[in-house]
Length: 156
Image 1 (tube, rainbow, N blue to C red):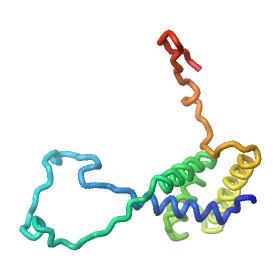
Image 2: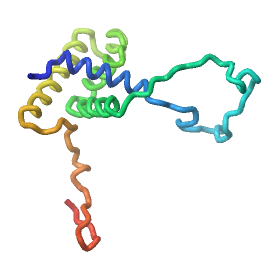
Image 3: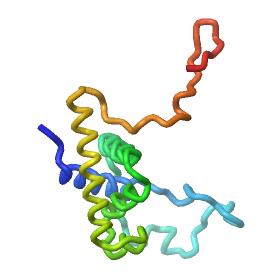
Image 4: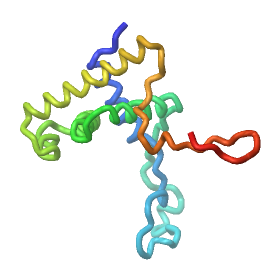
């Protein structure tokens, strides 16, 4: 059964949600100037857990794999079109998409719809041939060193 652009749109929305749900603990980002000290408790209420409890649902490995696949599909598109697709997946309104992309709404919608059709066409072609859907290889990925029996590497 062929994959439709609507299914692609739903998968991108799920991928954006999964990316938002990934854990981002304090201190995992860049430190900047003067941020090398660990955080300390400012108030006694914080020390004893009187803060509001936040529940965070961590995505499963399958969700993360599907997200990575969706992000890989963006490599099939023009960078401007990929940005429009990802902004819409994150739930950004069309007005903001148009401002960020620098196009009018009809052009942004047309590029978004054409991009979903392009991805669906690629996936349906890969499904017919029986290959796994992956991002296209870049020129830098071709120069991989493969070790042989003697321990020295040969360039592929």
